[in-house]
Image (cartoon, one colour):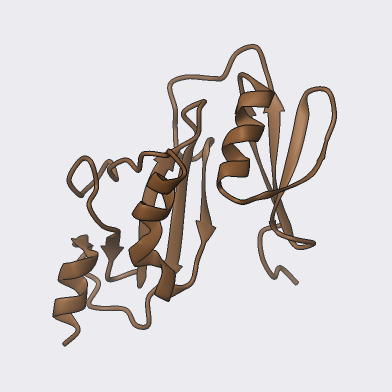
Length: 152
């Protein structure tokens, strides 16, 4: 029955500023009204809704204000440069990696790699891919370059 995520919603303090930010990510504006805007993540399949509000709740908690955009495995190594080309500074994963990040973080036991960044309202965003295989479930995170060395 469930085949994927259709929508996610985030609070924003300035809708115009947020529209400009999400357009930098090459997302297509699906529609907008006075205080909301929806962007296609996968056209016709999934979107993100931005809701302008006077108060963007703080402190941030990832269970409320975080989601990840998917990418292909072959694209993840270029994610930091791709964000920086758009004037967006990646940030460290709170549980690992140097700040500022120099490459994606890998969770070998979950078989995924990612790069974190924030939108103008401090909503936590991530670009994430699935890796070709999982490693032993030891919970250790590593940098993408270390993961590549370990698989040889």
